[in-house]
Amino acid sequence: MCAVRDLVKTYPAVRGRRGAPGTPAVRANDKVTFDIRRGEIFGLLGPNGAGKSTLVRQLTGLMRPDEGSIEILGHDIVRHPERAARILAYLGQESTALDELSVALAAETTARLRGLTAADARAERDAVLDELGLTELASRPVKKLSGGQRRLACLASALVAERPLLVLDEPTTAMDPVARRAVWAAVDRRRAEYGTTVLLVTHNVIEAETVLDRVAVLDRGRVIACDTPVGLKERVAGEVRVELVWREQAPLDVPEVAALRDIAVRSGRRWSLRLAPDEARAALAAVTGGAAFSALDDFTLATPSLEDVYLALGGDTRNLKGLVKT
Ligand SMILES: Nc1ncnc2c1ncn2[C@@H]1O[C@H](COP(=O)(O)OP(=O)(O)OP(=O)(O)O)[C@@H](O)[C@H]1O
Image (tube, rainbow, N blue to C red; front, side, top):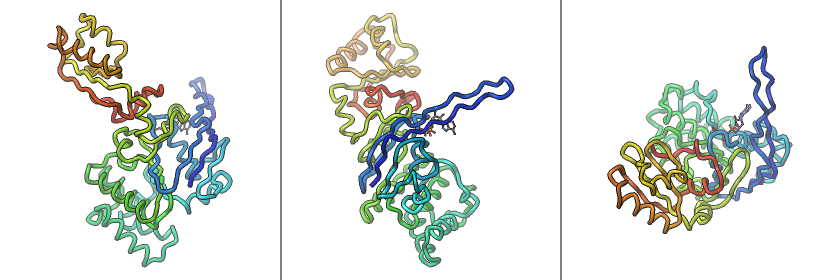
């Protein structure tokens, strides 16, 4: 339903004025290629600055690529960017003009703009607000809601008047678990009833593992892997993750601990290691059996997550949310 081929987007360099340093050109998307199938929840996963929003802006017709092609439901979006608005609903990260309206009016106005009659727009509005648990907030201005409520209200507007493709950029940011569940239930229902396809932008690995059918992992503008979460995890199936949390500082005078130091991803008191099963056993025996044990606060042993895949692929995890617990 969506085919992206060799998409390239470079933000040009900006020359500094009056001696101020300029900014170099940034190749935000570098030959990005993938396909999205009808009815799937397809994810774009990557850390801050990986190029996800740039990609989405091109898919939604808001930005023109330098090179490459985008075809959605047979429409050439590079040549006809205006057609994107008729095919897809886009929930961006930024707040919009809808912020000034009440929750109900924002949804109703969007439905009208998408071609529904006044009566149909009101019916859609009521159904979507009810579905997302927003009825009580219907008369409140969007801009006066909490962060999570505002996201939900913007999603309500995105969902009115069915579109075959939903493009959702971090839809559940700032939402509580009840709101998150309402979002995924609403998405699932559309998929089941209308075969709706979803492109989900996220850097939340945990959410990605649970909701996505397939995921393209983006790193510095390039797709470094594209597969099902299970398929990606199989790439590191031979490894387990060991998490060590030290009480204060790691006892580096213990040789076994010093040896682990260089292969651990360290975040304060927490060390995260990807090891072969027998290495993991040896490491745990060393830190739980000997002199290091009194310095250890906690440890866990877990099967690989998407985070491990990301690391194994050479990704830069510094900004990947849901990874490093502090
Ligand atoms: N308008 C712009 N001008 C110049 N550079 C930009 C512009 N917008 C983004 N960039 C750069 O392009 C790269 C990709 O940015 P983009 O916003 O697409 O990343 P992202 O994956 O969506 O990040 P995030 O998760 O933080 O939203 C980054 O290096 C960013 O600094």
